[in-house]
Length: 160
Image (cartoon, rainbow, N blue to C red):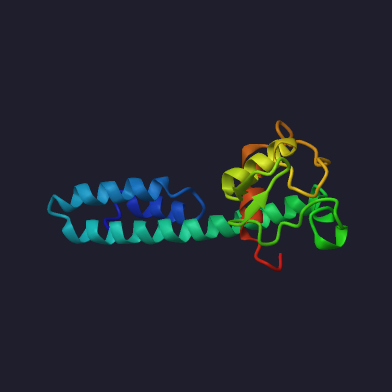
């Protein structure tokens, strides 16, 4: 890469934790450069930026899932949403992608939107067979915390 153009520094920052926006910007710059005489420099820049996007995405997802798990435990959710808790709150293992029967007879898909809404406004998403005892978290947790919790819950398999 051309050390004077700043691309290698920006990509290094992307790999160090910045969002993949910068990598996409680098890809655009790489394509523009490809149209000029710097074909090989651009090709290397674009390839490196694509790899940076993929790597950042995997690392961010794993980090969010870990943050979500920590929040889940710190907020006391793990005491309620397990089989051992009895019929207090539904277990969350295997929830993501499953069909959920709600009070009132409606059956809906437990996708990310459902999980978000069930955390923020649980009284509107009560699962059949359970009482509406979960407190609302609307206004009590930030968007980053909510995203981490959703990431964690979607990562739970059949075994939790």
